Image 1 (tube, one colour):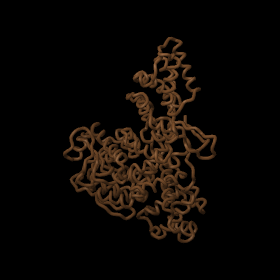
Image 2 (spheres, rainbow, N blue to C red):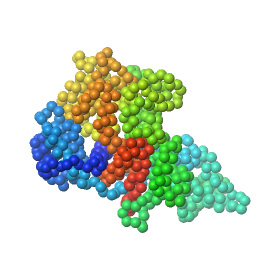
Image 3 (cartoon, rainbow, N blue to C red):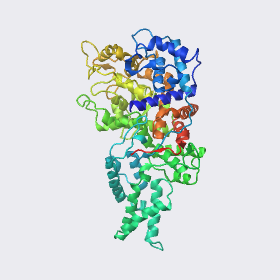
Image 4 (cartoon, rainbow, N blue to C red):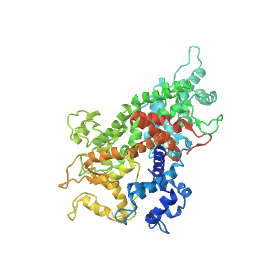
Length: 625
């Protein structure tokens, strides 16, 4: 995920919180009395002048209007005030608790006043991702060959998802791949999938071909087709027939053109000339938004029929369709694509390389099981409408025999994944899953820093800034050196003034997971010394071990986690990054989610019912080539 996308996500999430709960009472006179004095007394010494630290110059903000001009920065200031990370620990005394709260309240009041813009966001034309292409070909032609696996890799953006329309370009080599794939999949498909009628019995080849082509184009374009579109495709049929191709071969030539046309390769939406401003998408466009959100594939016949009758957008029908689609096995695609990318375990093979000499158990089979645990667990949250807070802490998981053996859990046999009740809570939730723990380790040792960063960034949506340059690297293993354990060496590293602020946030979270080794197995000792899994958060909470850490996250960081999850899912559903104008939608989804006990299906339904999901900017379509 880029730093820009991350920053924008923080802005959107924080503005959503402000709009939801509103600022606290502003005591004094807002910026002039609560913010400016604090800046002058505690901040401008480092963050002012000709060379401000971290390129953060707070001296340039003279009033509330200038503050509104850079919400990204000021939300970082609020975070630093609330989390007490600035001034850095060990430096001169910072503002007291009351001054911090007054300043944070005043900043929040200014930023909250900018929320509430009714704007569905940019209308980007999205090219199908590789996975969407594979799933669509499967559902259109019944072909399971995954032709898009040979396509160039997709981009990434919008909270880190590869379906972000602004990053899905079409390089020349991709067009060549599309042409080859169209030929290949039509050759491998059962003709019954596209030849719906044959000539004969009073039906001429021309008439039969027109019916076949129109039927296929309607399904492939995911909308009704007009006569002019079919006429153009019929020209290809006639050309092939004139050169002597048989009926089926001639039809296939026209269908190849369908499979390389923008109507198939892109999720297209049309402007409306009968309304001004934001317009509700058509029911066929809504069906596509819904199916590619939940299934990463084309609408099925039921969605198409509802769109034809203009009934899909009706609230009761839409809610029923969400539940029907979540119950369908195709909803697994959402768990794979959303959870796999959000939590990053979908890229475990590329991102984690445990040393094979130290960890020979890390085989492709075990790695696949690690990923599957996360996917199966998240899919169950949605499919069974379970509380999303179980992602943080619960007492069950999904295992097969290989992964259960890895965890030291008995009574699980066979390669199939199934729900397994755990004896205690130390492994329940994503923080106890081997895929996450391996992802956030180095090849030869665990990393409290990487694990803490993962919690802040992926779970709480509050990523730390990048480390300063020229920082001396820590040891690559956890051997005791000069009588110091790795944790002791890391604590020495944290004493540096330019490291202290970030490490005060990162390290305690990672320390709480130190009972898990590089491959996520439980351990009580490191290098023959007891594991020290204690930590103290910058907000004051102290804990020992993963169970206590998870309890704190659920009890005191719940709002951060839920807002982050809502923002990530909106970004995935909207196929773009979440911006400040999405604040009302975030607020709406949060309110509905809380009202329904944070249930998984309620989250998906609230996203589908949101304004930006059902509306689009009118006359402002953008595309990427």
